[in-house]
Length: 293
Image 1 (cartoon, rainbow, N blue to C red):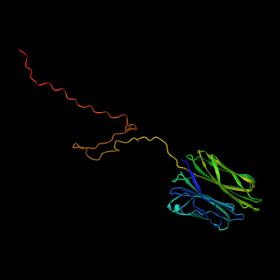
Image 2 (image 1 turned 120 degrees about the vertical axis):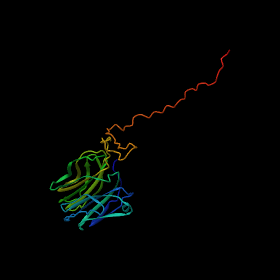
Image 3 (image 1 turned 30 degrees about the horizontal axis):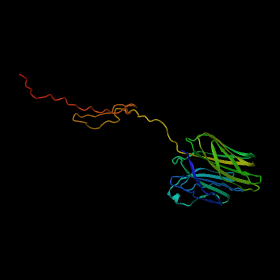
Image 4 (image 1 turned 30 degrees about the vertical axis):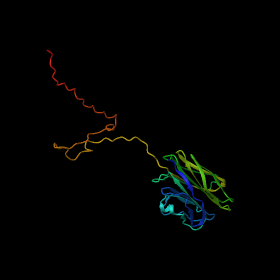
C-alpha cells in the first residue's frame, strides 16, 4: 500500500506570531494530516520556532541562523478535526516577516508509526547555487513513502531568489511554497513533497537555487506507509504437559496429556472415507417340498 496525498489545503500566508491554515478538503477520521510550515525575515528574528500544536506530533523543526525556521508536524484526524474549519499554529516570536503553511491530507499512511527518518542541514559561507543534504542511507520498509523537503537561505546579496529541481531517490516532487524577501539582504523559504513509488535507499537530497547564495538550510522528513509482514507460520513444538487435562476422563480416573507434536502433526491430508453399508445374507427357503414317488 502506498501513501496517497488526497488533498492539499490552500497555501496559508501570514506574519507575526501565528498562521492559520484552512482544513484540507475531504478530511475524514483516520486520515493523516501533515502540516508543512516555514517562516523567514530579512532581519534577525532571534531564536524562533513553530510551537508543536496540542494533539499534534513534531516530526522536525528548527531555527536556522535567526533568519529562517521550519516545522513539520503530523496528526491522525479525529472527529473534532473533521468538524473544524482551520488550524492555527503559533510561533515563539512575534516578529516574523513572512510565514507560509499548508496541510497535506493523506490516506494509506502508517497510523501507528508514521515517522521514518528526518535530517536537517546548515551550510554557511558556501556561495553556491546548489543545496545538498546528506544522511545515513535509509530505505523505507515499503513502497510509497511520503517525502518532504524544506529549503531556506539567507544571502547578503540582493534580488529575489527562487528554488527548483528538488531531488531525492525515486521521488517526483510538487512544490508547496517558494517565497523570498527580494531585499538587499535576501532570505527565502521553499518546500516540496512527493511519493517514493518504489522503496530505495535515501542518502542525499538537493535543490537548485536561482543564484549563488551565502547560507543554505534544509530539512528532510520521510512519512511511512504500513509494512505488511510476509512469512510462513509453523506450529511450535509443545511439551507433553502443554494441554494436560486436569480431571478424570472415566471411571478409571487419571489425566490425559497431549504428546509432543511436530509441525506436521496437524496438517490436513486427504479426505475421510465413506462407511461400507451392511448387506444381509440371503434367507434360505423354509418351504417343504415332497419327493415324488
